[in-house]
Image (cartoon, rainbow, N blue to C red; front, side, top):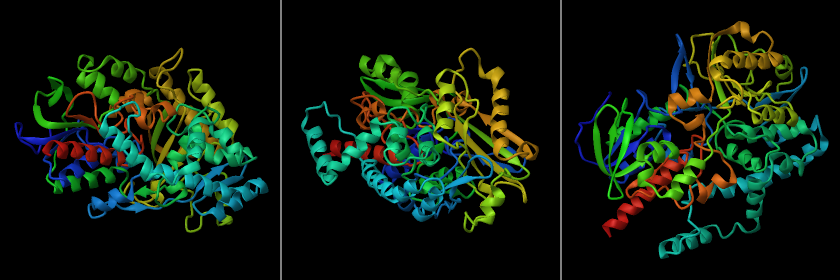
Length: 541
């Protein structure tokens, strides 16, 4: 165990898990004067935001792979740039179509519009209005991200005040709220079809509805997931960007900032149990035999793991146990991290360069492979019936086009993320099918970039059971649970306990199981720290 703390030392707060939300929570609690201990089961901090070696001299962002949602407020307030965080731009998104054709998606409305016009003048004309409409809805949700969900069934004075305050802060939303309701209930396809007519144009946006979610573009409620993925405020299409040194640089900066504030961080410390006495969490014990006590315990682990494995059903209301068992975490996402001689040489590459599509970029560092709506829906259909996609949708990104720290000179790292590859296979298992699926992924890439196989040095394939095993995410779900209407806001993760608190006094949750959900945003960690301090101040008064 790597420990910079003496067992028996007194802490105000203990945080279970050194993922990015746990570290954000630790930072804000320490800023508020709390003495904080962070316990991490792995030998490296970071959770799913880590950079690790995949081949000699090659390092990759193993799980999360692009910068998008980490909020500028958190970057600024925790001085993460001072601690080494550097955001690098990626190119506009390019999606290859049949032959040597392609479609572009850019933060620059005019560039996206010009690309769409090649397929539909109607869609090009509609796009600026659609972008305005979507961003107005996204701006509403961006404000709601920072709110603590109010339980609408409670009738106490505090809940009434919180609810009234929430409504007053957002009183100007008015009829725009109907847009959010539409996105929460409509399929991505039905939502986009109200605006666009060409399914290649629609697929550019519908693609986001499938990322990390067991759904297709025609699944009800999938429209909201589009907005969840494009709410970033950084460089690149939809707010995307690379982090110098990989995504692990985010959590290393957060850890450095936390240590500067006096936070103790212990790695190699898997939690065996959250100890509960008389309905209150009092301590945590590790599998290696240590016990740490604190007045407040905050879990960055999945809510399912916390409730069912670390706390136990005997300390929880029956309704909470029932709901958390029904909380959907079934994942179909996969990740492949590749060390290679050169990145994929796409059929469209010469045309993209000749037409100057990418501006200052000579190579499309950010791609989507899914040429139309039917492609996305067929990928989902395969998984819906219990098998992996015969032609998965894939996001290939090449950070080494802008970041030379990840690979030897002249070599590259390619991250592939996509779906669908179900956690369990009907009539099969991953032990026997993983290599077949690896071939399927490469076959799909080869359709658009012939010969890429020959440039591969090493390829690390992670399917949902691998993700679960390494970073302890139930069923490998990258968001700690589906982003569906019944698992959002005051119902995330269970009704009555969406305010970062739990039925156990002194026990809180700060991870992606809570509002506003997954992605490397840090907002659940920020919100949880605020609620912890609110309760501490209330006791003092």
